[in-house]
Length: 275
Image (tube, one colour):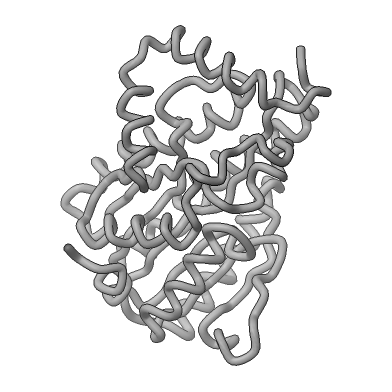
């Protein structure tokens, strides 16, 4: 089976969003260990922490960018392209659309503004960044890795907007990959389940709402994603429990899946968000 190193060694640079925490941070840390020659360009509001002696400024380059703002990428991407053309003028590029967040509760909790920001970050930013960088990827070769979710496979009551944004990412990525067939660029959707990050706390779920025993680490998710990239997969669901969940969930009648997800998430949603 191809290794994560096999996947990364064919690239000279990685452009990713949300590298300051969670899965994005693991992509940087694990990627830098597996393929030391890689140059990373991170787009996020917060700059990733650099532990002394681990990752040099030449390897990890931060571009401050608030993906919830509609004009942010139009201003930032030209800077990234100029940097790559100057510092890493040759070689394939891996684009990882990783940034995203959720909110749990009855729509439009916690508020409508937050719901619309979720659409901006989870959907608009993915489409826009991919569109802006695609000419460069076509010219130099590369791959696009979009982080979706296991909730992309069925409607998710009490996470309605989040689930719908991830369904968009999954289906859009698979369609894009088909459009890119025969070119030197491919696209892949990564659909992790419960992962040990700050995601659920940020989304409004309290302590104990998520079972740690069924959670994967961010390194496990990243390793699975890179193995799938090396195998030129169009979609990967990390973890056997998540594979079983999505296999069943995708085959349930959509109205029943929405009812069932509501029955489960209603018990875990914040009390203030109850209808």
